[in-house]
Image (cartoon, rainbow, N blue to C red; front, side):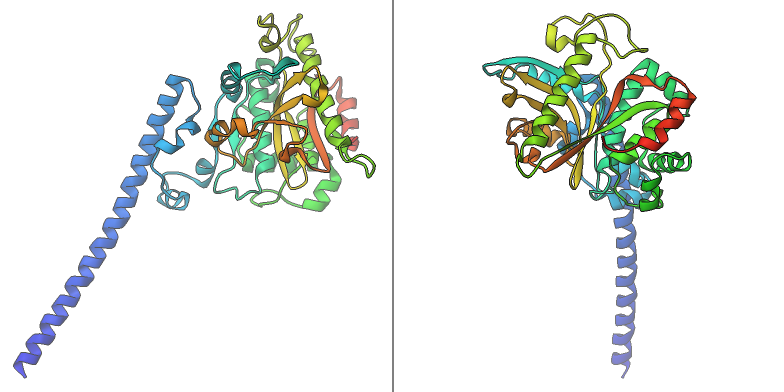
Length: 363
């Protein structure tokens, strides 16, 4: 009997010991995760400094940084969901220019135009695919803020840096309240803290609410001609970059003649050429340039897709992930809508701004 009691006591002590070990183990795991997260944060800071020093985007170093699930990072409090999601590659145009500078050119190649400086924003784990419109809008704002006079204009509205997704949601709702895109407001109701998609109408409404003259164009196929939409889009984009590059200015911003350095080889003046927001069924992207050929059928556009990591984009550049032309699977949609900023980007007066509230629609 005594032996049984001793055995039970030993079993009890052993059980308590195991529980203590398990508790310590769980605590150790938690501390380990916290420690790993802190190390990741430190590594991220180091990586960003390294990227800046060697002149490449931070996200190109993704493969060199240890991976911890975003949910864990968010739970530790070291990174918010937005910080995890907002992966940015600074001045992506410069990187693209370096990539394509030594790319083989084919017969009939005439010119290569790029948008002005902008940063690339990609969707993160937090976005889950619904935030592509916001990421493309962030690319647009990064370009506007890189231009001194546009940045000065935006500061009047309290925009000193690229807005976060929640900030964009709030500003679109404010645009609705001011009378822009009332149909969109009736359809979407609310955006803040929601995972609803946005498209050209919301983008144009926001830009106009900030007194920036933007417009929407629609390029659609017909039953008779299933390539009409893409043909018109490519022609329009070629004209958009060619005209602005040749002028070397946007009225009221940059004065003096000039051409982009990629066309003439000599930068005569700093022209400001904003990127183009492009929407097709189910997704949106950003057009940042065009490769022009003598035969218009060979002309291709430079497109940034927020659903891709930029590191992946660079690796696949020869697979037409960035440079898209007629016949590309990524340009095989029935219709396209684009949002662009007018050559003269500011409204003449308050009356013209008020009138713009009723025409936020595709032309």
